[in-house]
Image 1 (cartoon, rainbow, N blue to C red):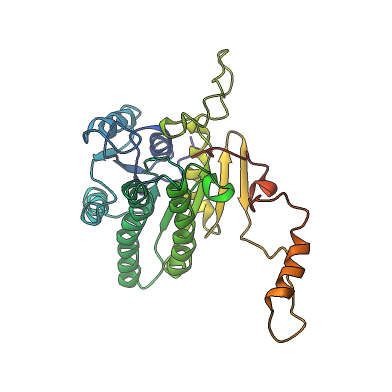
Image 2: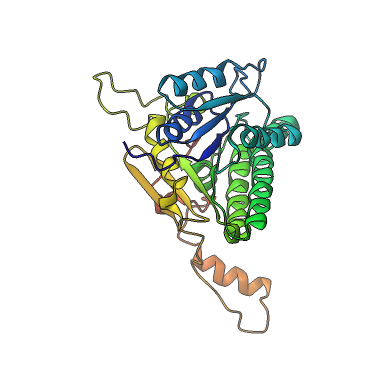
Length: 318
């Protein structure tokens, strides 16, 4: 069996269930020693008592398959606990090589009725949680690189969403956080490249606790056939991005599900207009832009769905 991650140490956040669990199992299968991080709360909105159970269950799965793993139950959205998570990997395995950020919650509501705490909680876990772990992992790699006088090995895989790409009417907090994660990823990729570290983001479509409403109409095959929305189909891409083979992949955003991977282009200019005079007037803008958008239905928004062929309307996949 190919084990491209042999000798490498990884952290996977939100790894007690769903996508994170599948990713942790895949990294371990490919040879990595894995810190399985999960806060363990039962509610997908972040409610419930924290529990070590989900992380410990995945650790047992990895160990029973002959792999190396340990559990960490800290809250990645807490700056100090995120630091301790990175330190735990370094203490246990001597270094950190791979960081997979996956932890998240949902508190869905339309923008006109969303409460402040619903906004803050989702942005805190998704965006701040990604930043916290990235900050301490980046410092670890920078220090190692400076000590060695050469680049080191580092991989970051972040979790964004098609809710950012195509919009999601009932998830303004989630869509904004996932868009922020893409910005964090590209900035990190530029900052850490000289140290030997890559940073990429994925937009996975998978049947998990987070997406149970999204895929309510997509039943699992009852004949034992392939389920294209199984989280296990996302995990190989994470394994690849974490591996030496992906050394030239940096600052990228990829959509993945089943047997499909799409590399998303950075935004491109669709049209450009130059004023007749030195600057535009209101009247001239109304003329040229009005003509450009005249064929679009009133109120329709720009969406990457037109390019990617993604589902429009309602919630988008995690």
